[in-house]
Image 1 (cartoon, rainbow, N blue to C red):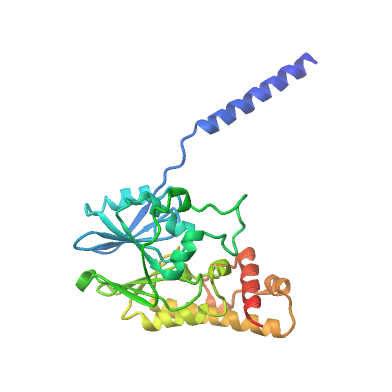
Image 2 (tube, one colour):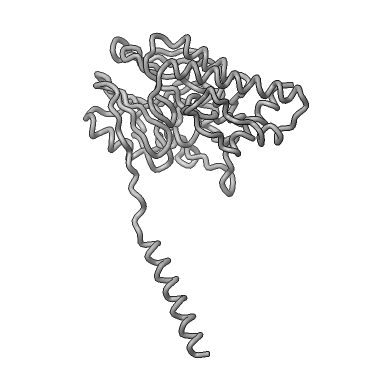
Length: 306
């Protein structure tokens, strides 16, 4: 009996010691990695969506600012490539892994978005296709008294700056959300697509924030045709790709829509389609579909086509 008690106490002590050690471990460092695209354009990865850092004659323009707590690491990394101040943030859409760092930038920094994205950021709804965390969604902007919200918006197109510092913002329609901005640096022939082209995978169709599976293919095609003389596309979460990749992605999404239309017409259920749909062999190199996202996307499209 005494031996059992002693062993029990030793096990409890060991568990407590392990727990204390875990609590004392420092948090993992927040590392932002840098890829140089041009002399004045960088892609900064880690902590959420890909950020673009565009260095102009008068300051730095940042496209997307990552998850909560990653704004300062991003600012710190920007200081390693330029001593110019950040003067503007452009957010491609409303999701927290692209906008939350806004609140960590100086209040003097101008924030620009599509008008629908501004409305979405003011509310910060849950995202379709992602399992919600416990409790209601956190509104980081409300918790920071509105800091980081956009004060300048556009509807279809907005030009910022001129000459080599020019930036063109376009809106070609619904897709990932209803406010996906395409950010073009004409002098560099580079475009940031945000998560409407996050990579070669199934898109996240966020119906809660206006996303559309019936429109995304056409929206992508319009961007490929209407954004000017582009060579490179910064994706939301993957590598830098080409205009040909963007055109292919538009076709992929159009084919997905067509398959869903045929399935619904044939009387198939969402669950049946989601459990049987496979990535077409012609799209070799595309990521295997996440089951949760696939089912969500099938549901979104089924809800759209009547």
